[in-house]
Length: 295
Image (cartoon, rainbow, N blue to C red; front, top):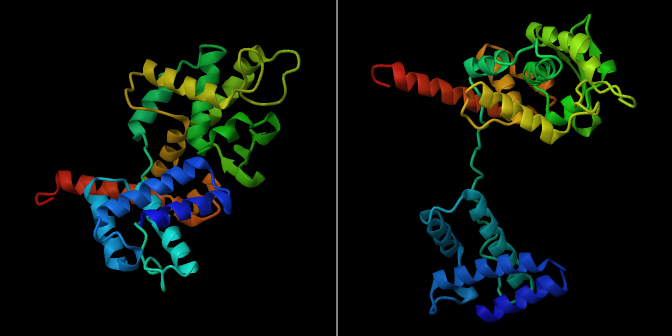
């Protein structure tokens, strides 16, 4: 096995031009597999799909994350494909091997009470920064906007009469998103009283500005949210995207149609939006477990 591993690593380096780091990663996987087989069985010709399945169970028993298991199985698959392709093996034992399924990672969200606590703790009469921060966070939550979308939002994107904002999202796609009453009031107050105090010579038409009159950055939005959450006594880890996740989850909890949520989030595929249905199911299961007499 070791001689074949050496030849394969040279193949990755010389013919595929893959990085040294990738070569090291592949070598570690193959040598670990060789040790797992044992000295007497570390012959590629004796490896079958059962051996690979046993190795997968071995990785799982060690508590390895599914994502890491997938990487190791990919390394084994390309190794055995190469062995079969060069004639060293008659057939590839990994050809029908099922890859470990990627675990479902549910997004973190804030409950509706916590979001209200966060937003209402910001004094809109504190001009210009309190006024700005309240409008900023209200808009992210009310419209489910990404940070990149909110910081690039311009005055001409906002329609106060129709209570809509035009959002330019991924792939340069544009969507219209309605603005709720609370966010609309906060935004109007900021545009009337807060933003004029932040405007400097050379300021462009971005809605949300720094004290120097420049557009907010992604990092500054993150800092603002974390500072405001600490001031509100919220000890959860918060980040701007958590407000987008909360927006979608709270809409679903209150009966909104998944297709409407998809449109407002700007997801091109409904499968991306369906992650929130898993989150809602998890919440319902938790409620059932807590309150049902046989939960």
